[in-house]
Image (cartoon, rainbow, N blue to C red; front, side, top):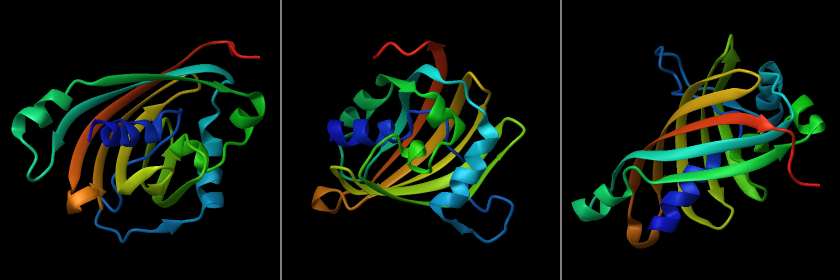
Length: 178
């Protein structure tokens, strides 16, 4: 279960993600990867080394002992990625998932005036089940923060899980890899 939580929290580790769909009562709108990439152009991030810190704020799962869930709260993971000038200039929708070989769909993605919101649904990439991530946050060219509500279904034994997480990221300097 710990690996499942880590996989879910790592889905959104680069400077881009979004929030709750249809929060204004409007109907949810599915978006293509190209439409999401168009929204990402608004971000204007700086290339370089980026660090993201993911923290689990809360976790619930029917049938899982309260102590086990409590032990997950506060877990942090840090990921560092080099964002090339090419990636910064033209990020793809998969940039949001921070993984290759994933199967993600997008709904109601919007980025405007330093705010981002949207829903990303992912499966695959070695992760059991499906994760629906409602995201909202703030961004600038050198930093971002996201609040995520991740609902996972289709886990072994038919288990479902809800994780609330926070991701903060920042540019730390020039890329350290060659």
